[in-house]
Image 1: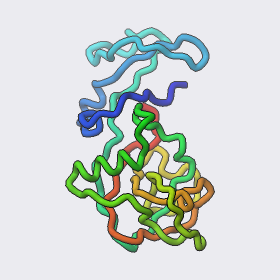
Image 2: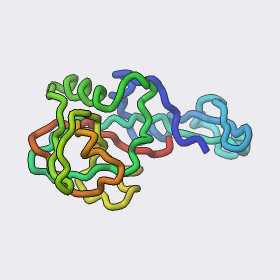
Image 3: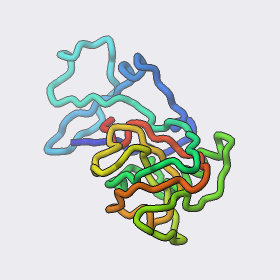
Length: 187
């Protein structure tokens, strides 16, 4: 089944905020072709009744995952989101989460140096390779934690961002985080 549609990243798209009514009415339609294949069929018409659409039609809301930026204080406990490597790249495969973090926090008036902002995790030492790590501030012992919820991106080194790292870490100095709403959620 179609999980998401990756659209090119734009500043206007990232800043898109919809009311509940807009989210209910702003939908796109996909027609089921075969197996897991769907094709774009048009825009949803809120005036039509559900029974007026043919069987096999998939409705998906138009949404933004941008949640703006958030201040995370030094000393805050954080956990790596296990299984976040498959998070879409906003359609621009030449831009990674670290670059998107840098752009968005600067745009919000909080430019910061890209470096590892966590410590801890069973004595792991930082390495020089950085990435934009998907984090939560509640224990993440379940690989599904954060799915369909809110996560935030901060720069961390790849030694701390390892897929099997479910240990508590501590934010080592104040940092602004990029917030993602509805993480890995369909639509």
